[in-house]
Image 1 (cartoon, one colour):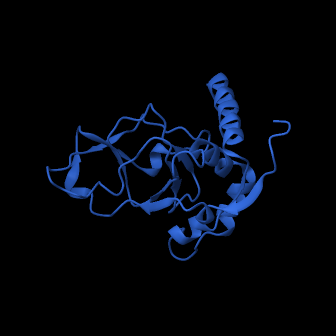
Image 2 (image 1 turned 90 degrees about the vertical axis):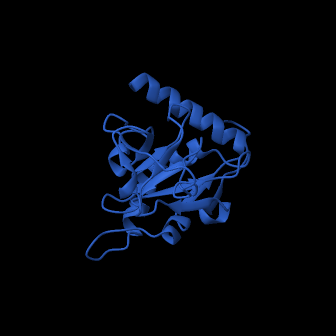
Length: 178
């Protein structure tokens, strides 16, 4: 990583991603089989890669627009925003498509070619970022983080090529650990 350039401190919001969360209206679409429905239980703190051992499914009727906004795409970053705040997931090529998220997960999608979602996921899963998640959590009767709170999370961003090299290196280590 020598001579790779300086890193820039920024926030998720400054990178102008698409940010949303799942809607609450999924119950009528639950099914024994169909499209993958990603929940907080599919995110885990040991890895940015989703744990699909306890998968749930939905079947959307033809013509419905319920899933358009929350359909997952390659390189999306997922963040739990209720209950256990700040669990980070990454959508890689192994995730079945289509797949959707519920209302307890924020989806962060960066413009292709400008930022590496896998790097951002690893960064957000780091100890320092996890402390920031805990500090910025909205407390009350039920812990939660707003989408505006997600936008305020700080990042250190190297240039895109270095983001990809770092993500590749960390993915290699994850594969060895697995």
